Image (tube, rainbow, N blue to C red; front, top):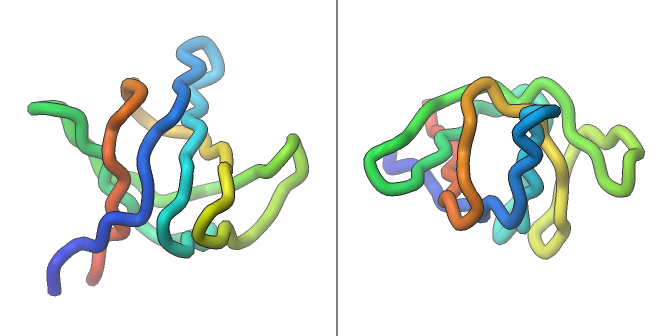
Length: 84
């Protein structure tokens, strides 16, 4: 099954290694995402997610959520949910 695009990075805080995502699909803590910008890409499990500094377990389409990332990324990077 193909990976499903679920959003894009709208801002990246490099010191905190946190990416702000504008979701176009649902995302839950514990799911694996792939973040792609040009020839840079990495996969990671979503360990935590926040909206307005409040921890949440699931982000819905249309929301802007913050996640801690394991590698640096850039604004405009596409976010895919990795299907197992």
